[in-house]
Image (cartoon, rainbow, N blue to C red; front, side, top):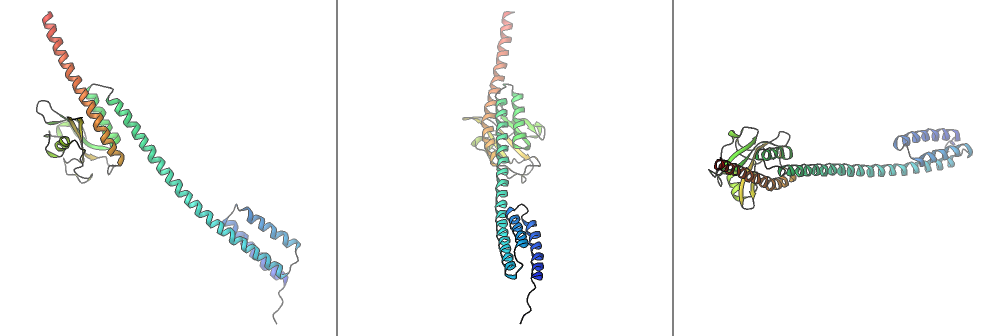
Length: 271
């Protein structure tokens, strides 16, 4: 026959287990109000109920059931929190991407406005240089225009080297001349794999069917290792705006020179 279990020993055992349960659940779900209520209920029953074995077993079982339920809820809450954090990270990442795109498009709008705000060729070319550097991230490149006398592509503005370092190109020959001839943006080689003097992208400058020039990018800035989808859009937009602005500046320069010539001739006639 087994020895009867002393209620006080069972009570001491339960109180010990109860305290461990409280400590464990407090670490897991500090703000869980239902666990607090469960603990308060057990304390109340401890003071009023008869300290019998079955009663303590019942209370112990109820407490364990509640703890298990709270642990399941805690695990579910942690999982939902992890999903929510992941969604927040994705949202923030996408927000930053959209903000960057909007910022780039705003810069492009401003730069385009600057391109068409002047008819001075040197100012127009400087604006083109700024756009290619700041928006595309090019480190070494040149802007070519067709020379009226030779019919060749001559570098008129450059970054990463002097204009003299970029030799003239024949229209239709080489990656730069072929790009202008076809009117299509060309990617002769991937960034970082180009040989010295080999462009990584050629942007034709054409005004409808009229060939104006070409922008040849030979290398990118150190912090940029490739082209993004936005860069490709910028290439297309830049090609049209830069071609129009350069052509308009050229016409204005020609008209100014002719006007000065006519004015000089008239001055000679009136003397």
